[in-house]
Image (cartoon, rainbow, N blue to C red; front, side, top):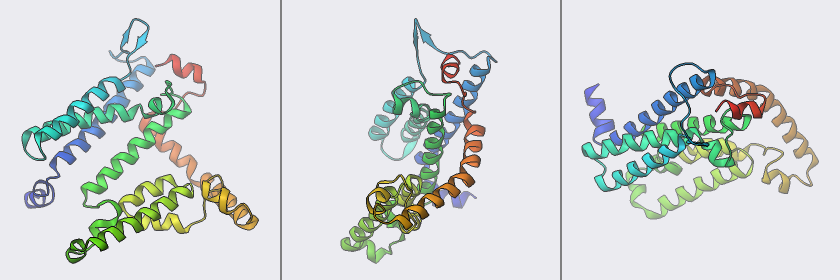
Length: 254
């Protein structure tokens, strides 16, 4: 175990990334636990307010992210300062991303249906960083041999090709596949060759005069959403808590 840790984490300089990811996940979990206790009116925790202003935890999150980011730049990639900066950055990022939906909507939607977006983004972020930590490089560069890495043309061709696959998947309305495809090109290829979602830019432009393709895309999207929407929502609710059906009540409980 010690040899694995040294060869795969310490020597490649991945310890700060691991610390940042751990701090990010732990901060999100602890934050959600506290906010759910506040929502239920249990425990000693209360919302932080200054007069009539509710201080959201995205505010200290931004401050910690800035401190950790600049600290990482100033402290280099290795050593104790880099590790401390990574932990600070991870804590700040966890607080910020937990309120991603608030930043997106510029409105407090934490316990509303729109607030699910925060949980989704946090899970995607943790998964992507985890893949990078495991050795995956963006756009499949890690799949190149040492000789191919020395050839600038091979690197550029691989990056551009995999970037186009991710872009096609995104145009087809498959945002999650496109994001993961940046790290794992095969996933982007899978999304690029599949039918586009009916509300995607690809379908609106290229399926406009192809009624059969449009109908098939609508049917496939219907079956996909019917199969996966429920489990996805239950998973998000298990992690972050179920939103309130009444938006006004959701705002009162924050």
